[in-house]
Length: 263
Image (cartoon, rainbow, N blue to C red; front, side, top):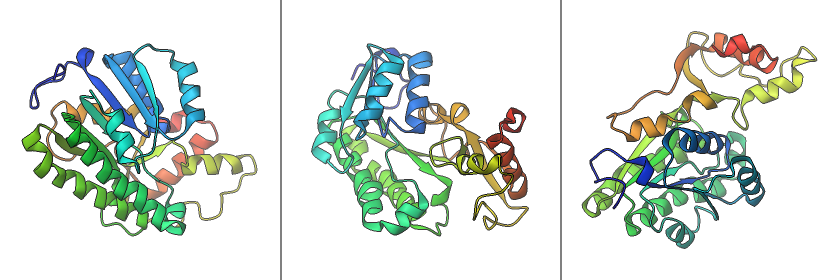
């Protein structure tokens, strides 16, 4: 292991890093931050979207980048991709709540079985550290998406019982709502902003007016897993809390192009 001892600080310049789901909103910004700030020796993007991979190749054009077309449902492909990897960030998931509700078998295959495959592949490949990207919707889940992520979290934490004796440490970072990510309500609101009408079902039943939710932006929060990996113990909230009504107003303002609402 040339990047670090299991419990020591990482030397990113010598580390080989892999991110699953690396072509999504989080993955794109995460790759940008890793290349500009941490400069790992090797950075592997693992995803099933070949078109987005080709777009990232053109965008970043960095010799440290490697790309694997693959699915987290395929453990053998994960094992091949993790060969020689020191650190894994697991971001691949089905995240759209309505899609998960209408396609529950697929959500479980990707979010739960896929997480198990990542755990098994990482232990067999002797990856040193593995961080799962989770969600605040895993707290007392009321939909299948949140339930699958809660299940994946428990798999990751229990993975330490099998992985730690072999040198693999698993951890979890939870995100809140991320404004501007793919599928964000902001994009739905933006399509209606010029007509001065809210989309049907736009956050009117999301909770009590005084109820807080955590929110953030992709650029501001994409490095949270790295910060967590470098030694912050326990759970941390990503972003600051906003009352529901204020959050709705800010989403509408951001969608309409008012950058002051991002503060």
